[in-house]
Amino acid sequence: MSDNYATYQVSLKVLFKRGKSVLLICDQNGVWDFPGGRIDLTETRSSFSAVIDREIKEELGEDITYTLGAPVLCFSRHLVDQAEPVLIVVYSAEYLGGSIQLSLEHDSWEWIDPSLYSFREEDFFSKEEYDAIVPYLQSS
Image (cartoon, helix red, strand yellow):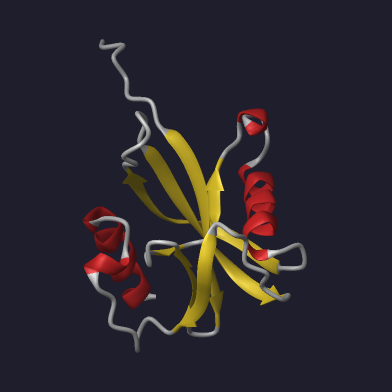
């Protein structure tokens, strides 16, 4: 048995749904993403829902309310400036309300109806993300 295992950072993100629309946030490079982020070292014993709640408050504001669902997507992201790739797990959630106050990490946000939007591969961080996200959005 090999003990030469890969090491990943873990990021927990949320696919918010409001009716037929989903919430996408855009970073400084014009790339679509979901709100959320990596588990901090101090959170290794925290529940995933607690980590997600912290991240949502940081990225979207304190008064966002939602009902968290189950994980629906999983893919990896390879950042140029980091040795470890990031394993991204995306949870579904029903957006209940609150005023979105976007953090400085992102430039904009938009509610998009996936059945009416023409996604392009270059709108995402990588082909792997595009191939994971777009079919799911168009089928749900």
